[in-house]
Length: 284
Image (cartoon, rainbow, N blue to C red; front, top):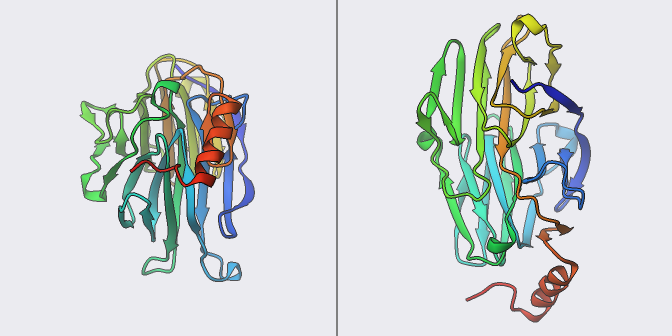
């Protein structure tokens, strides 16, 4: 059984055109959360923040970006002619491959809130220069499995025989949102050998069997787990809890991150910058 081995308190950072984020981790050569590179939690719900800005047109190469919305929406468009809206409950899994330019602009929902997460997933060297693609799933297309006071919304992976709709990802991920009623407990299968982390964003969660009396972990925290074949989560206290679960197979390759690019060598980063300057970054 997996147990917490590290607790991370997210740090406030500014990205894009002045967007305030809670960042649990970002890309680094040490790559301690392989295959995951970055996890950001964004919300624009404090009036003193002023007008919502966003992420104007910018490049990516060598990674996958995963946007999961809880409230509000994100309008996006890219250099390949794709455009659309990621609404509340929707997910977009974008594989940048050899290169894509895209824009993401948040918009408030009817209640004035914007709330969501972005995850970056590494690509192996053999796929970093592949063709870009999207897997966009509307809220209605994400299966919801309910069991014993737990509600599991699956993006990728399986739970109780139900599979998430995002497939053909190199990291073979498990990704989903888990909601627990007060005192509810759920056992979540996670393949042995996968890196596994959970982001607690509401309430507090005790990870591990009841008999071990694990200490509850409050929102907002990122939890890094030991290896094992699954984990148990229980909502602690009189309120329910919600968290995101992410697990993936480590790629085990050296990486060189540089802003929106994550490649395997410094020469590949220099080539990305050259392609950007020369107008050859995006393939026709």
